Image 1 (tube, helix red, strand yellow):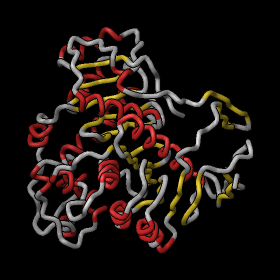
Image 2 (image 1 turned 180 degrees about the vertical axis):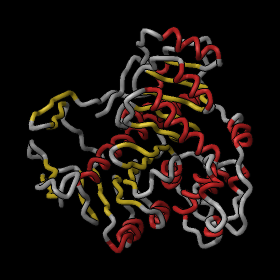
Image 3 (image 1 turned 60 degrees about the horizontal axis):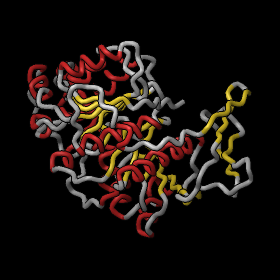
Image 4 (image 1 turned 135 degrees about the horizontal axis):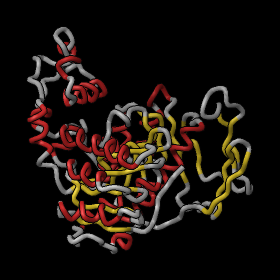
Length: 391
């Protein structure tokens, strides 16, 4: 089959809609369940490229959680600490490597991952399917599914959950096209290979990249390759922990992604881990309530008569001083940027979120200022020489 008719395009009024192969070749995907839409397939194809490249670069199973053609999270399979298992709500589950990768990808920004599209580099197994069964998600793309996993996924969302199988041997054409306002754009496909060789031009006084930092920077850069620009990505422990996508200025990307990284780390504070939730509170409501608790207006939002809906007793406020103290222990974070940093203010903001390692293209007329700011904090920064815009 070289064509698949869709219900509609980005919006219900945009008809007709389809995906097809202009060269007459077979589509490299098979719909095993559900009826994926236009945006679903945009997420599926972008996320599949991301996870397949992560797997090729690291040798580890990889997963991504996509919303509106940008990743909310991406990760490779590494051991999960008890704390991460608790904040990701999987401390009651048995996790395979690919299930661990998806747990981390979704856990980076659980609010944004609500209703996500899932991509797996490896076969979807029973453990991953059971994890997905209890999360709100739109669909999944993977190279294969075990029989058990497929049956579990087919039962999700009253039998309408979107399940797509992709041919991992498919190679797209070297030149790609798209239309805007009836005008066709053409460009060479971005088949740039991202690996540790891109991290050799270290321009700071500190020249040390740990093996973990190299892995995390590769994760950040590959994530950025498939994130709507401008974009910045913070990464730690084998996963993206904050993605700032589609902003018009670099500093807004850095702030947005940094704020998400801060929330990821604040969720690990014992004071947050010990919140006295009622047993009947659903995971999405816990996620939302934790974000409110971490925010500065907690007492205004969860006033008397409201907090009782979520907690058995009213928690003590998480004060600014307490949050500042906890964040002061945040370190070892890696940061990637899809284009150069024009000012040192990006580095100043990154430092507040524990950034120690940076990879960016370089090429700004103020590179010296950016390098000096990194040197002030003992950071290690590499110039990759490669821009990663994605539109």
